[in-house]
Length: 338
Image 1 (cartoon, rainbow, N blue to C red):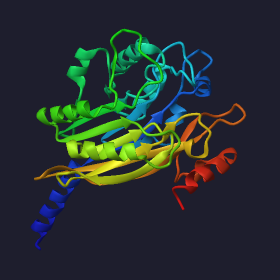
Image 2: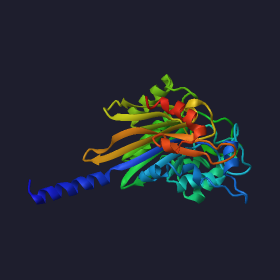
Image 3: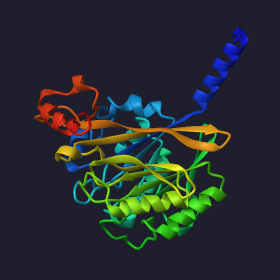
Image 4: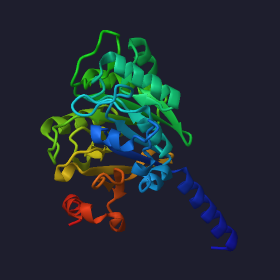
């Protein structure tokens, strides 16, 4: 191979690498009462920046990052069991690198239709697109599936939840529930709108179960057979495995059954953190396919004796774990790093 050929090969290889799309997905972004109190400053403002400093680099490295916003936004603020968080929380998620939110989850109606509609207004003001909840049926017709352009590739997002903990308030807000016929229709619509790749974001499964159940597996297979290219799950508050299913037309479809918690105040051993799914998409003459899919893990280091912040730590950052968190950190990571 002469020098010109070598240079041309290197240039084409670089172009191929740069054309790959790096997606990142995170689990349940929650705000329990102690988290809101911890972030509040003397002047009444809220500072969430310390929560994400250690993971921000990973998030911002992605070409497109998605998180499940597991709480409505706005006053009055409250924690479990009926959540509502400061707008500053969503703003910091955006500033730390997240481009897109799933809002279809069991807590979105904790403050009724009014709280869900208020949340959508806040997200719009922050410039954060979302999927799964809509002001009314007309808005849903326009915005679902939500198609975004990432490096010239049209990626469609469809979101749905198994249900909500509270009912609506009669204002007509639409929360997409898991419904096979509707999701199949949305997938078909995405294809008709020219989507290159289809992601289904599901709030499903059984809380604190470390493995997916039969209903999850059957739904994953149905969605893959219907044309979904990637399935990302949340809700159980613990990590469930990243696996693949083979669709009826022979495609290999990754399924992250549950990413667990992203940030929360939960205390159970395996709910002290979660997984981030890193998915690489590659385009060639046959279309857009998943080239790689893997998990990395994060742990929530809590304040100690009223000092410090809730800090998300990558589990390979052992040097950042303070003495008061070491036992919980070891117990959480033992499952993933045996």
